[in-house]
Image (cartoon, helix red, strand yellow):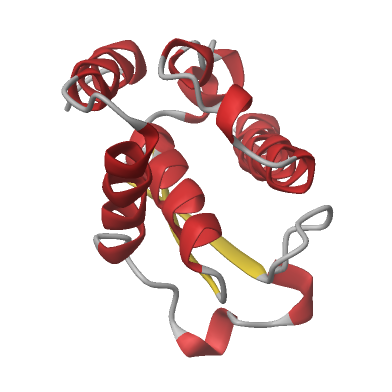
Length: 140
């Protein structure tokens, strides 16, 4: 399994291929398409990420000491964002997630190209994923 930093480095390289933001947005949308979809039974209000303008559902479970995320959103770009975050943080140990420095977001220019609402939503996703992971570290 790749470390969070190795995955981030791959993402930075992948996004570096694109010359303009139209290509990068399409690549981001592809992450939403490849997202391990949340089971409909988890599309509950308590699994909605607070702070996102769109609806974003996030579920988590532990398997072999790794946190597994599944998610979905009703908006294409937001689904891409949560897909990207699931790609980076899923299948990692809770400690690795809690301590992750998510430097790829700045390196690919994501913060500069998201609306303030989407930026806030992305921060809410990260916060929720780290909180889930923190909860698992406390259960050990």
